[in-house]
Image (cartoon, rainbow, N blue to C red; front, side, top):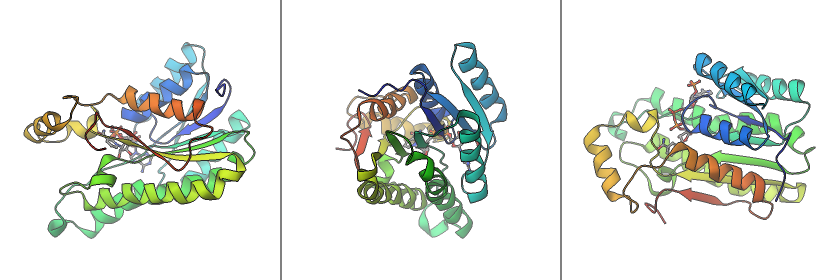
Length: 247
Ligand code: NAP
């Protein structure tokens, strides 16, 4: 088991939802965390305060991960402040749901840019530093929708499935460099992203989940920490955390 104390992580979109749970769980394990946010300045500052008050170390950095210059600044801020980078969690994501017939080019591109192209941006800027780490970890938060598809979600499914293919290929390239690359695929998790869905649809989803409930953000965060701590021999994998909805 790797000791995570004093390791340095970047969590994109780390100020709310699943990202905030990942940030907290890493900080609880002694990791110094860079919380990237795009619009959630208030929540990110509050989370930094919460972590610092409980004896941890965190830094909030604004940046749109779909922009390569912003990604570069986030990585620079991490290395300038904490001197190293060991863990990159690509969590930032958006939905712009619509049936394909009605899907605008703008909603297609925005979802691909934020959910998939961002991963190129953050990984390419982080890689020189992760290579210096004794145990680099890249964790991409994909989705069950990238595995089984989703009605009205061609853009989102394409981006999340793309993340899985990217994860496997990069894992092959980096295995000899002591960097593991994995995807975590959540099912339906109780965050603002899911709360935006119509109640009727949500009830239908819950009744189709074998464990009969939505997942909690902390359940995803624990999977991420498991991969960081105990994942030396786990690479190129999809960790499904979905209550048995997709096997
Ligand atoms: P959420 O509550 O809507 O939060 C989305 C996060 O992404 C926010 O922290 C947001 O930051 C960040 N973000 C969005 N655009 C960004 C950008 N351009 N640059 C930087 N950060 C950006 O969603 P969530 O449910 O926590 O989802 C987190 C991840 O899990 C996403 O990748 C999502 O696709 C995936 N996922 C979620 C579920 C689910 O059921 N909730 C299921 C499967 C997969 P700001 O608030 O600062 O803008």
